[in-house]
Length: 129
Image (cartoon, rainbow, N blue to C red; front, side, top):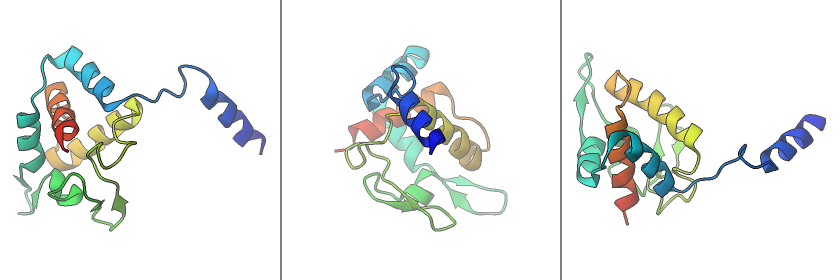
């Protein structure tokens, strides 16, 4: 109970619980990468890569071809929509954004995503209406 109270209190302090907008997340990536391209981000999202086992994977393998739709992991866990228009929480927490880019890029691409890829990806998803 005390721990829950303390965590709730800390979350109210400025700077500890920063809820940002997708546009602010994009702006942060653009500061590092330069301009972002929704077109490149769309190509990145729909790209398929052949794994050594012959499996073809990409973002849409779990997130579906429609970024506004609910996806499923290989373990059949629900993934909320990627597009901010369908999921208001998407791209509002910089730590979560980086966590998922790190995990998913390594899983799909077998490497970390570049800052340019991240900027383009976010630009594409913001453009989805």
